[in-house]
Amino acid sequence: MSGVLVLAGTPIGQVGDAPPRLAEELAAADVIAAEDTRRLRRLVSDLGIELSGRVVSYFEGNEAARTPSLVEALVGGERVVLVTDAGMPSVSDPGYRLVAACVDAGIRVTAVPGPSAVLTALAVSGLPVDRFCFEGFLPRKAGERARRLADLAAEERTMVFFEAPHRTVAALEAMRDAFGVDRAAAVCRELTKTHEEVRRGPLAELVDWAAEGVRGEVTLVVSGAVAGATMATDPGSLREAVAGLEADGMRRKEAIAAVALRAGLPKREVYQVVHVDE
Image 1: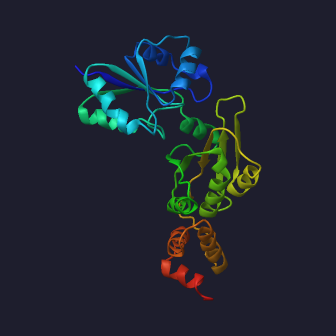
Image 2: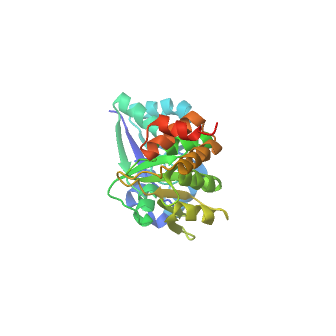
Image 3: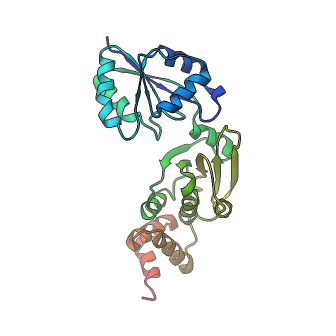
């Protein structure tokens, strides 16, 4: 019989949030695949348990090479527990590749539910939670980031993003340009930790706040577009919106298409407005 892959959620801040099954699974595992073995050792110490299985690293840089050996161990009947630095493996963390390989091989995959920055941020944001989507990390390059957000401008569900602290200001600025200055959002920082902070407000206000610098783990929650709502369609607003996307690195043709989508106008009309003085 083949073994079992266990995706084990780990605390995002407070070790006391760890589910009891996490300690049980770690102690009983034949193999523990960890994104950071040093963090795993600290977690094991905090949980007051001892590991009997072997520990291997499994992170973005080696997951492609290490997945076959883990699948081989599972085929051989071993119980493999996968943990990442915080939260649920495979959610913007290593894990998906191994899960897909196990599914293809007919190996059972289960999970130890645990804390989630996505759901925690959503719950405390004060924004609608009945429908939401998780968008992970935005592209690092300004043009690619602007294009991604332009595609989301008409999204009516609440959106959740992960972001690095040093890119938070740029992300908020790009969201302001793509979604409008008044779109409601929340910056959730250091969730469940000692210096937890949730800053809520319109995107323009959050940009000003973040300009002083943001530290720690960051999750951004942004309200969805109002059904049927469009941006201002006067020539000045249209030209300003296109110019803002171009300044973020988007090519003019793509910027015009993105603004046309947000404004609910044919692309040719926005094109004519932008080029009227040229």
